Image (cartoon, rainbow, N blue to C red; front, side, top):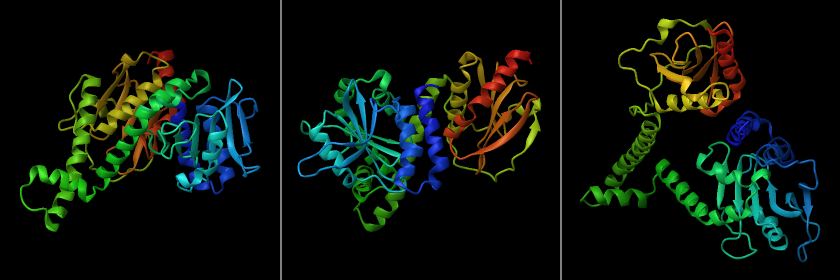
Length: 367
C-alpha cells in the first residue's frame, strides 16, 4: 500500500472509532501508535526506534516524561506529546515538549490528539521550539500537498535537512491557507471591507456590511470551485463541469443486476466535481491490476459509472452522489451491485479489495 493510501486508511479508522475513544491512553493505542508504525514506519515495540514515556531531567523538573521519543541512527530525532482525541490541540499542552526540545538532539516535536498532528521545529531560535507549528496534519481533512513533506519523516526516507529547509515556507504558507480557509468559511469585517471597497463606491454602512458579507462568502466559494474545476479540466483533458450542491432524497441500500441501458447517457447530465474526484480515487486503487488508461467513466441520470475498457458489461463501481446520503455501488462476480453508504470520498479506500477483485474477475473471465 502506498504512503498516501496508508494515510487515508488511518483517517478512515479515526472516523470510525472516534466516538469510542474516551482517554489519552486509548488515543495512543488506537490512533497515535498506528500513526508511528504505519505512517512513519517505526517499530513501536522496538526501544531502539520508539521509546515510550521518554524521560530526560530538565533543570528542577525531574522525572517528567514525553509520551514518545523516536530514535534514528541512535539519536532522538522526534518527540511526541499526546492528548486525548476529544480534547482540542493547544500550544498550552506543549510545555514538556518545549523543555525537552532544548535538552535533546530532537529537531522535530509533534503535539497531537490522534486526529490533528502539529509539527514544530526551531526556526525562530536555535534549540528552542517554535510557538507555532510549521506543518499541521488534520486526518479529518487531509491537505494532500503536505503528504510529500510528511513522508520525509518516515523511517525509510528520513531526510531531516530537507524537512528543516522547507519548514519556514511550510509554516507561513500553512498559516496563510488556514487564515484564508477561515475567511472563506466565515468572513471577518476587515476581509469583507477589503473586497467591498474595491467594487462598491458608497459608504461602508452596517446595511452594506451585511449585504456584502453574504456576497463575499458566495464569491469566494465560487472562485474556489472554478479554480478546482479548471485544474480538473486540464488534468482530464476534457471540459470543466459545474459543481452542484443540489441533492435529492436518499435511496435505500439495494442489490440489483447490471442493466446496460442504465448507462446510456441522457440529455442535461451534470457531472459534479465530487464524482470526478471519486472516479480518480477508484482509478488510483485499481491501477494496481490494469493500466490507468483502461479505466473509463460515464455519467448517467442516477449515478456515475466507472468501467473497465469503457465497456458497459464491465462495471467496476457506481457513484451514487446525487442525493443527501452518498453510496458507492460495488459489484460481485455475478455483476450484482450492492450499494454501500459512505460519508466522505476517503471511505472509498475502505473498499479497495472489492474494487480490485471486480477488475481481476473481468480479466480472468474476459466478460
